[in-house]
Length: 577
Ligand code: ADP
Image 1 (cartoon, protein in one colour):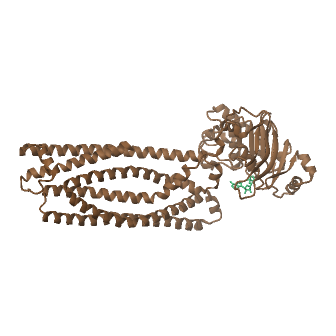
Image 2: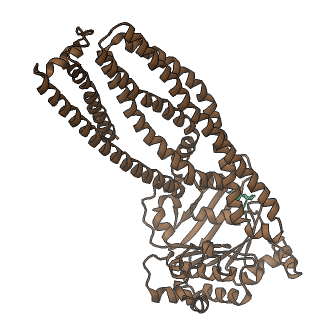
Image 3: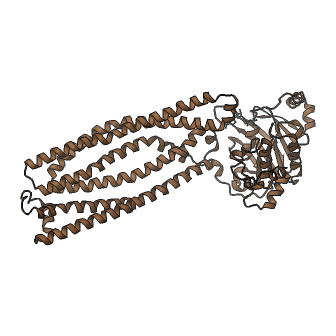
C-alpha cells in the first residue's frame, strides 16, 4: 500500500514540476510582454533558475518539461502496477480468510445463518470489499495529489487559490447532499441481491421438486421479480452516482471562466495565470474523483460490513486447549449428565444424558424424529460443546484431546452423504488422503461399491457430479461407506439411511459393519429395528432424554416406548421418521 501511494505521489510531483516549468517557458517566448506579477516569488525563482540567455533557456526548459513528463509517466505506470498487485493480493487474502472462517467459525452460527447470506458474502460482497480496500489507496493518492497541486496554486497566487477553494467547497457540499441518497440505494441494492442469490440457490437445489410439482412458472415469476428488483436498484444507484460527474464539470467550467475574466481584468502575470488555470484543470477531475470515490465507498459500507461480520466470527471453542494426544479408544466413551440446547431459549435437544459406550461395542440410537439422535452424534464429533455435563473418552474430557487426532480416529456415514464433484476414487480417498489404488479398491469391496464403480464409464476415475448427482442414493451411500472404511476408524458413526439403500446393499453394509475389526466402536442411528437386533445396547431417546436403554430383548420385555415402536413398525407404520 505504501509503495503504491509513494509512487502515485511521485508521479504527481513530477507532473507538478513539469507544469510549473511552463511559466518560465511562456515568459521566455513572450519576451517581456507580460510584465505584471514579476514580484511573485515563484515566478521570479523559476525565471532565474535557467539563466539569462533566452535561446539556451528555452531549450533547457523544454528538455526539463519533457523529462518531468517522462518521469511522471513511468511513475504512474509503476504505481498502477503495484495497485493491481495490491488488488490481486488483498483479494486472495480476503477470500482465503473468509473460507477459513467457514471451516473454523462456530458451527451452530453457520447452521443458523441462511445459505444465501453466506453465499453472497463469499461470492459478491467479498469482491466489493476488495474494491473498497483498494479505493482507500486510490483516495490517499488523490488526496496527496490535491495537496501538491493546491500548494502550487497557492505559490502562484494565494488570492485566486482562496477564491477557487471557496467555490470548490461549495460545489462539493452540494454534491454531498446526494451522498445520503446513494447510501440508502446501496443498502437496497445489497438487500435485493441477497434475495436474488436466495432464489438462485433455490432454483438449483429445489430444481427436482419444482419440476416434479410443475411449479416452473411459479418459480420463474419469483426469480424474475427478484432479478428485476436487482436490476432496478443497481440502475437507480448508477443513475444517481453518474450525476455527480456532469454536475461537477458544469460547475467547475463556470468557475474557470470567472477566473479568466477576473485575472485579465487585473492585468496579472499572464503566463502564471495560464499555468494556474491549467493546474486547476488537471486538479478538477481529481477532486471529482475524490468525491466519486467517497460516494462509492459509502455504497460499499453494507458489503464491507457483511464481510467483516463473517471475518469477525471467532473460531468456535472446540479448537481451544486440547493437547492430549489420542491414538485410539482403549476403554469407553462416556456421557455424564450431558445437556445441550441449540438455542438457550428453546427446549434442550439433549437433557441429562448418562451413557457409557464401551470400546468395541455397537450402540444403537433409536427414537422419534427430533428426539436428539443427531445431536448426540454431533457432540461426539465436537461440532458442538455440551452446555452442561461432560463427555469423556477413556476418562478424559473430549476437549482435552487434540481435536485433529480425535477426528482422525472417527469416520461418519451420513444418512444423506455429501459427495464432492470429483472422481469416485477421490471421493473415497477423502477419508484417507494419499491412499493407493489397492487400498481404495479394498475399501470399496468391503462397502459393496467395487462392482458398480467398475461398471461406471471410467471406473474409479468417473466423475460423480455435484453432490454425487450422477449416482443413485444407494450408490452414494456405498461410496461414503468406502470413504469411512478406508480410514480404518476406531469409532464408526453410521446414520442409517431410511430409504436410500436397496435391500441388497443394506445386507452388504451390514456385513461390512460386522467385518470391522473387533476393537472398532460403532454408533448407529437406526431407523429400522431389523438392523439392530444384535446391537450390544440400544438407547431409546425421546425429547432429548434417554428413556430406555438395554439390549433388544430386554427392551422388548420392558413393554415401554421401544416395544411400542417395534410393534408399530412390524405393522408397517413409520415408527421412527
Ligand atoms: P433427531 O436426529 O433425533 O431427528 P436432532 O438431534 O436432529 O433429532 O434434533 C433434536 C432437536 O434439536 C429437535 O427439536 C430439532 O428441532 C433441534 N435442532 C436440531 N438441529 C438444530 C439446529 N441446527 N438449530 C436449532 N435446533 C436444532
